[in-house]
Amino acid sequence: MLHKPFSPTEMSFMDFEPLPVSDSPFLLLKGNGNKIEPDDCIFTFMSIPTGSLFRRKIPVLCNKLFIGSQYGWIFLKDQLSEPSIFNPLTGQEILLPSITTIPNIQISYANADSSHMRYVYRRCYTSTFIEYTDEDFHGGIHFEMIVASCPPASSCSNLTIAAIFGCPESLAFLRPGEGRWNIVEDGSYTDLMFCNDGSLLALEYLSGALHIIRFGDEGFWVEKLSISMPKMVVFPNQYLVEDAEGGILHIRRDNDVTEQADGSTTVVTCEVLVLRLVVSDNSEKRWQRIEDLDGGAMFLGTNASLLLQAKDVKGAIQPDCIYFSDDWWDLTPRCRRDEPRDICVYSMKKGTIEPYCPLLLSSYSTWPLPIWFQVSNTLTN
Image (cartoon, rainbow, N blue to C red):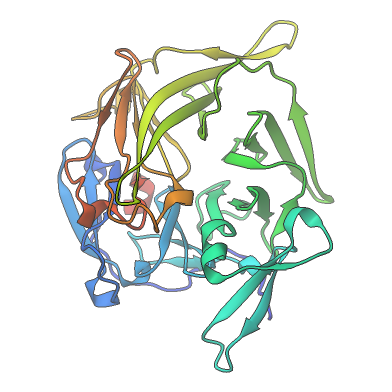
């Protein structure tokens, strides 16, 4: 298979009615239940500040899964976890290198007409490849998250892409001009965030340790920060966010998972902890719990996290609150296809967690997982 060098080039274009900047951010939901034909592929953008609904027919998104949104672009993967980046405002699509360019994933076989293929996976960088069924593969060996170092446009010459792919949650990255994914072999990660200097922050899944990946002309290197971590129960969902002052926030979200009598599973957020990285005069680093966002608001879930400063909190958005979308990939879609998604809002001042989203209906919130979507003046002008 020939892999072209990655570059932020426009791959396709369609006309889309712009979404108003004043109504941003949005919650992007599938709006027509289980229909899968491109002509029926209607998506709903629900404005968080106003509650207004904007429905768009976007055939490109048909049968694609959302794994994030950043800079007004949506990160996607198809049914074989082949990744791409799509701009619903302009119709531009950037195709990323195949998941099979990851060193420990290979194609096992394909039909004569190449309409079907299966992957094999080499776990933990051993010498043995293990063949998985299609169902097993989609349940764990796929892209779970993609983030970008800058807006994916032709003017961004230093665009670097980072991704988490599962079983275990390994880290891959892609630099301009490269046609295949590079691997960081040490660590299992749960969230990623690019810094202003182009380095990448990566949060380890179990320990909560913070790693910094720096990129140079000769390759990359990993720095492991030694930070004292508060003792607490295991939080399955963790997020990194840059605050208004350029500091680092670490948010932990615990869930109550209940198996129903019919075999389905209900997931509800039950506890949230927000920490800020504090550096003392002697350069000692520690996580400190905080109780507010200085009047701002945060949006977390299956995507690069979004923090609004107090001046941008408007309409129905509540200050000092965190809005969560559902990001339980491992329980989706088999045992939760018809269950409501865990979309909620956490008030840091009150300490309360309440369900969120007036459209919390199975036809809107089942699949793909809903994501937060921010529109900027740069994209709409």
